[in-house]
Amino acid sequence: MGHDNTHKLAIFRGTLKFKSNVQKIWGVLIFLSLITIVEVGFGIVKPGFLVDNYFLGMKLLNWVFIILTLVKAYYIAWDFMHLRDEKSSFRRAIVWTGIFLVAYLIFILLQEGTYIEGVKTNGFVKWNF
Image 1 (tube, rainbow, N blue to C red):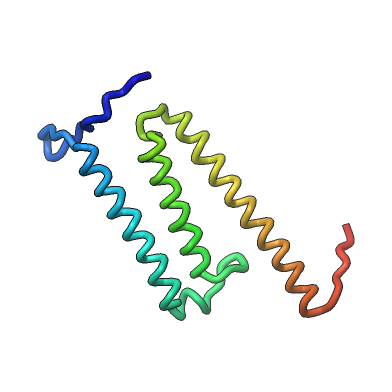
Image 2: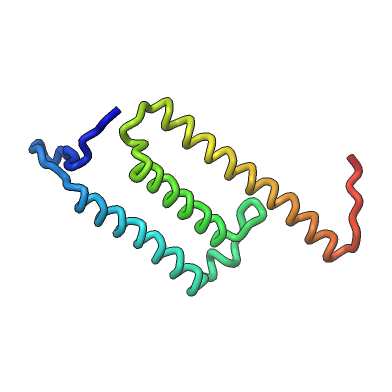
């Protein structure tokens, strides 16, 4: 399926405007740079309310990093992999699969981390299945 990607059509206040690829690339660069700057800023500053509070066994700061990373990954897939031009069912299949796998990874890391912390503090812990 061939697409002419030289210009994208954008509707703004009832008028039709064409958005060039150069404008799109600058927009993507600025958006991803802002999210990265926020992540790096939080990593350097480490605000107390995000470091001291926990949600589901992890610091809020870690949740912020995970969410911002997922936003960046989704936006990269949306823009560079041209998901915006696909059918909604295909987009959902890709996005929900990624969300499920990341949630499963977080669950496994929390379970294993809890076990390792128990071994570190209490010595060997045998799980009775």
